[in-house]
Amino acid sequence: MPPATSPHCLAAPSVALLVAAQAWALMPVLLAGTTVTGISIAMGYRGNLQVINEIASGDKRAEVISSFLIVCFAGNAVPVVAVGILAATFTPMIATVCLAAMISVLALIALGVEMRVRPQSEAPAG
Image (tube, rainbow, N blue to C red; front, side, top):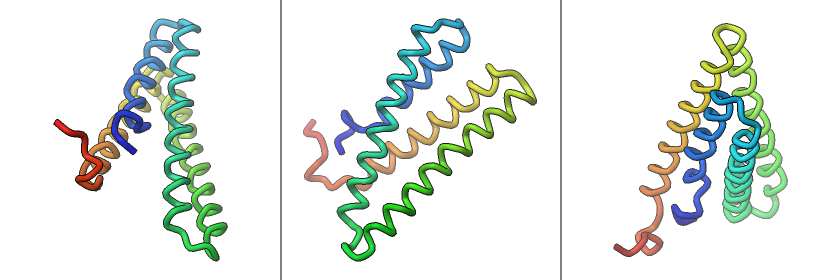
């Protein structure tokens, strides 16, 4: 997936919108942030599932996809619990900023890995 269509590119704007929505208490900003976040996550799931379908052998494909979905759903639950704990311990704003920082760091790592492993033939000209 080229970087322009990579879901990692949408991570920073989505978390920025969500933090701004929390800080300014604005529903339109929250809706925009939620929309961008949903698109980013959907693109990530779709891309990952495509790769799994390409590399999994036919007789093991269902098992591999089931495992992938379990990991995805667990991966969605862990941040929710962490934000709940942070919000209860500190403030909701601190929890939101911590989540945004973690998502941004992970997106930068993923983008860096993607840039390193992408074949040279797919690299943008320039």
